[in-house]
Image 1: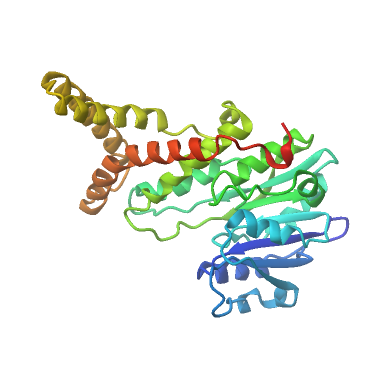
Image 2: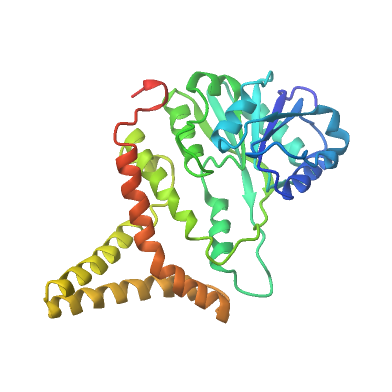
Length: 331
């Protein structure tokens, strides 16, 4: 497309089947194809290849790298560091761009003035039409409002070079995108939202998927250390329920402590507080959902476990990252 800046797509993957759908959709997008598609294989093992055939007409532009299970931040860094175009577009392997995506991307990049360091795509999460969404589906739906999510995020390659790219101390696909966005803005660039749209299906998950997700509280502790306690507002990130989880967990510990020391009345009061807090949390997750027996059972069980897990991971993150400095030593 005449006058549109060149770009390279970087897709980190752990070999999930959805990669084939991602590449198929990218190949079907017409108007302004990428200069290259860098697929970064972050599987810990090296057995077997990736299914790249669905890239179709883009297959001759696909290049693969291996990072051996270092995490999405490291995989994206390995990808963009080989880019030779002015723009690097990050896509997750579980998204599907729409047919007019590349044409709208060209418009987004053309409209970006020299002060713009990044342009975010719009995410759309389809939900079932015949029932209420589950807790997991509603959580995924929240990505539509996430700021600077690398599920579809274009950065000037120069902005990545100046900031050092992603901070690999973030081991999960969580907060590494907010950290980079804040550093790009601190370096003097603006971040804007574009017009292109990308579909983000809800991937299958076990009923206990919300439990390992609590590890992200350690990443929030790292964000506090790197960016100060007001980073939530600057990154346009929801605060979550950690303060409530801390109160509920504290009530449970106090109830146990009082019971062990023979203070039965205090133990009953603290146990009642724990019960009320846990019930409120469970109902907040159950009522908007489909209210099936399976969903209710899962919400009840995980609502008991999530508060102490969240607090545990937060405390571990505070301890682990107590001496952390911003990437590159910048304040």
